[in-house]
Length: 618
Image 1 (cartoon, rainbow, N blue to C red):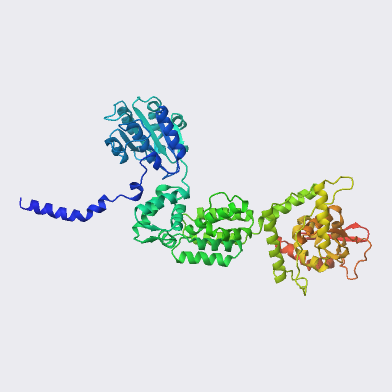
Image 2 (image 1 turned 45 degrees about the vertical axis):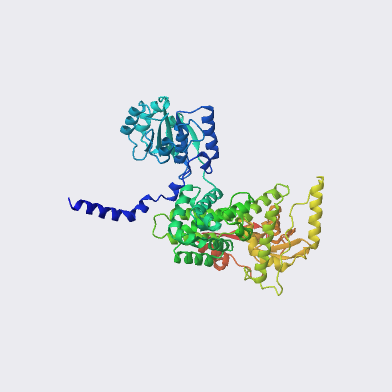
């Protein structure tokens, strides 16, 4: 008996320090919405429920659908208070009666909250059906709230159908789910469905700022924007992240503090990564990845941040600047500068590459390697949208119509890319080694619209006449066509004319400039029959179109026939000696190397008088 008071006193002294910790409520619960006015980002649902109460058109079952942390449970509790408040049904529950206070903490006897994940069997639903017939203890309605209702089994759904369709007048069902597609259609048809939208970053930042003010914590707006961006539209996730920030004991929430606690990459690093990818700098991209992982940032987090900024780059590239951007307003000009150096198709390809890499990195031990491979692949992407534009222009030219005009943004971007190409030529980058360098830098002319001249019998519209006059004016301003420039871009021309024409054109060469804007080409010695098909109308048209695209100036092509040309003195002979000479030809050696083939048969073929050629079977 003497030990009783002493032991009680000792227990009280031990429980005293734990008292404040036990009474502490986390931010997400302490600032849970208690009225319709407190709900953030779900105005359409609030208005619908208000009207239902005002018009007394209450359904027997409601289904709240949406991602995590957007207010489904809070909305269900507020709606339950509106129905069961002593002053209800009302749009403004009093918040002071026993019913309202009990519902706010989820402990009211007439508002039964059920976890669908752990009570998903037929037996639990049968017990619910038996209790449905009992009237509420003190409230107006008996409300069953089933969270994650999609977790119920098929048998449980079937057992609930009849009760759900015709419940007693004193019973209401509230369901909440994150995956409405898993709910049977027979259940969906018996409920009024409301879809909850993701909460905008601006609304989350505003709410977090209010919480920080009430908690007397100084916070930077940029830091709260990072938290809102990480939350992904979930208010509960944002409040949980803020709880972590507050628990750190930092006197002020700054972007550096937030990045350090969350393990995310800073905006400066992400912008530097975008610039490295847009500049095709593989070394810089891998260096940024290495620095991030050294400082504790996971590769998946770096890729996730890069994807967010690439999404902003895509939005800026297509001109949809009214959409909400992840990047801060003060950093938008820097991102825009990187976008101007990149094509829209390249940005789309980069987004797809990073998204696939991040999905593959889950649960693998070599995740960093996958991230490095993805970054290097992006830096090696060519300017993809130039090819699509060339195809459109060529199709328009072949159809006899003028190419569609480019938008100002596209024209500005092409001008920038063209200037960059000219700078690369001036610095000697990418010059073919088969031709000597020019003593003076080669400057490519300003792009000019290339379109076929109208036929004489077709009347010109005022727009066509204006375009033709502008084309003639620009053609007069261009410097004269130089044969050395043609020789330098000849390898690029062979790549663009297509596989069927590239082989024959490789046996031809530029001879000279007959008159302004007319290029003359002819066959190399000994390759007359191979190169002569380049003189057809279709071939000359194709060569001229590709040259116009490469030089950005109008020109035409004339091919000098080799029928009267004399065969060279050292022309290869037929038979085995001709086969040996063919085997020493660089082009034949390249074919043998690519296809891992060997020459098994040689046959001479005469196509026209005085001109023979040979075919070889590989």
